[in-house]
Image (tube, rainbow, N blue to C red):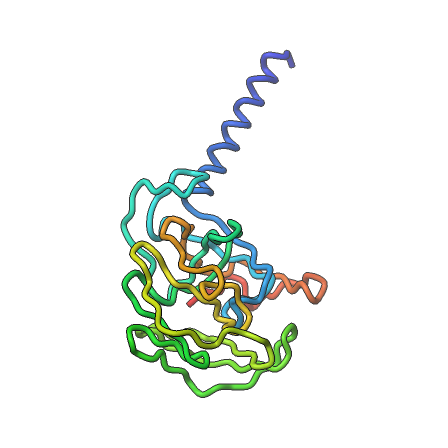
Length: 220
């Protein structure tokens, strides 16, 4: 094999790699979840599928939008870049531009309307100990939340208005999540896409054993 042929094949390989990477950056991706901030919806060790075309099309490897056909809705689970340090986070959209959001003893209020809970059920969380789980209904969207009363947390804040082009996000693990209570509102451009399902899951606390019951699990 002569030198010119080797160079040509390397160029073809690099071009294919660029194309595949660009498609992944612009169309679909997956995101590893290293923390429990979205428990009980998403577990530590889940690998979630991210639909990057759920809301818009961005230039690959950037946050610059080309076309937009939708916006995140209350209740959507999204992947975003933190405005503090650029870390990719997985959170739930709680309030959209123009909303007024407040919290009193973990009870959410959106535009003065409470987001009702089902009765609390006790649970034993391996990482956090005693916990409570409930169904929260947010404008017709029902999802589970986890409360850990023994953990110091911000459980109340006065009503605040969500600015134009920004979103307010929280973790489902309400007492143990780095979210808009700490990192502020999230600019629209920082939202990468919508998390739609768990591709696969590995139990990090148990020798990385696969959690077969979480494979291909739809996220609500």
